[in-house]
Image (cartoon, rainbow, N blue to C red; front, side, top):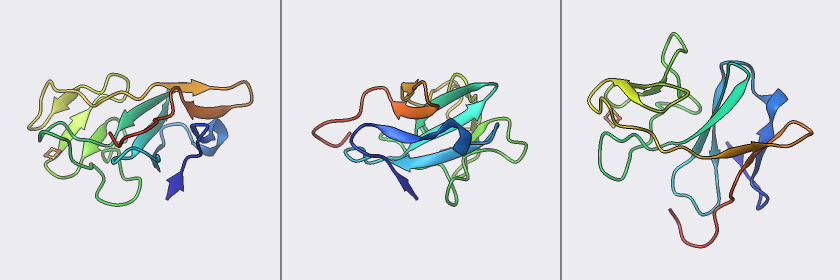
Length: 123
Ligand code: FES
């Protein structure tokens, strides 16, 4: 399990293979941040499926955030699929709802950071 520092550093771009997704525990956040590398970009999402109010963790085991074909983020509770780039649910019980985006920043040394590290209360 990965955990970020106060600076919001998550990992290095080189630590994530193309098409890979990984979850990070972030101090101050009750749900992990999912980082997906895809198509030369990185996308950040909260690990909170919008099927139920308040959100539900989506992976059935550590870092299992993608569907079998690795084309979409997947919630393994009831089979929802989300577009990696937009977070929109395109299949499943929360069709049309969205994951919550987490803005990320890539530094000039290839480090992936939270754009705004959380401060204060848990969200
Ligand atoms: S909790 Fe994610 S699809 Fe039901």
